[in-house]
Image (cartoon, rainbow, N blue to C red; front, side, top):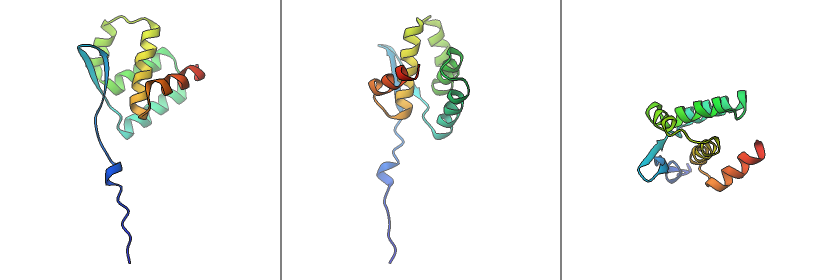
Length: 105
């Protein structure tokens, strides 16, 4: 007799969003291939600002990246943005991701 393992409920493809201000919310690209590219970037260069730029552009898109650049955020705020993106991609809380980020830096 065959056995069916139903994983359909686990294969949710719900979009994730990052709110950066009251009127600015961006969809986060957390698809498998995007995450693999992010992991490759992080593995090659660590957590440099250039890598953070590439990750933000890859996950939020060019238009969102330009808008964020126009905000002229402090580096601390930029790190918070990066941590928020990584939390969404990894499906973790901001706090969990921030703790891991601070340990790695």
